[in-house]
Image 1 (cartoon, helix red, strand yellow):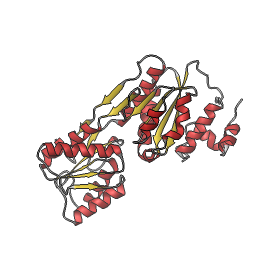
Image 2 (cartoon, one colour):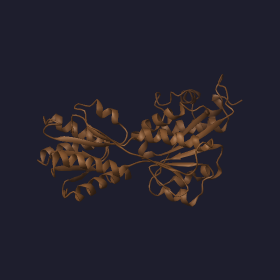
Image 3 (cartoon, helix red, strand yellow):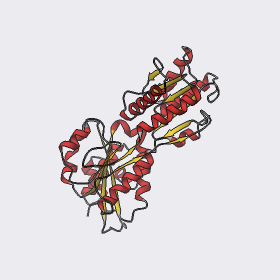
Image 4 (tube, helix red, strand yellow):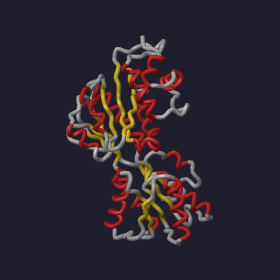
Length: 330
């Protein structure tokens, strides 16, 4: 019978660390996502079962791949969505999170080509990683998050529609006096930023010299906000294509005594922290991309396909929702 000590020796860590991870306390104890994923995978491969846990005849393993650059921001959202789906399933499901370096998904190809008892594989791939899936046929069902490929299932949030929704409300409130803050480092942010600009152009609004690119964190948003204030380049409406950027800009404006919602209005295209904007001061108007719903639906789809309840492949699209708040009301 496999013990915690056996797993710890295999992972090169302590039995306490293994115990925390397998009891669901890994994040609480600040154990890295990579180590948690490794421990869970090795425990599964060694057929470890905690004392008192009844084994189910119907047991499935779902491996979830997430690019490393998305972990910090999106892991809680992904996990909530997956966990919500698992809680209503009757079969026994083990979820294994496998972080990978973007554009190096091919290094994991042996898992999806050989199967290894995986009921379904859910992947959130970056640009070049799609080639790995195309070149190496999968022996297990694959559900892509926010990507589509022939012969694979997918669950996608409508990034382009989120950009159009934000643009229509921004033009309604600010006319052509609008600033867009986007990013060139994340494909989803770029997509919705470009959709925003396309919608403005099609309505006769040009944002030439009114588009700014920033890193996707609060500090970058805060520094950009301070720059816009100092340079006298504020607009009636500032639209942010990423969550944390909006929080930083709002903080800079508030610190400078500029009333958000009255003097300058803010809209955010929100990927993962929608509830945070509800409780911010002032509450921020958001286009909620519903990533949590996408993750939950992807897990349901994985299990439906694995158990024969759904056909494979199939594509599902999730429409974003506009949530009006004080920072830019209706």
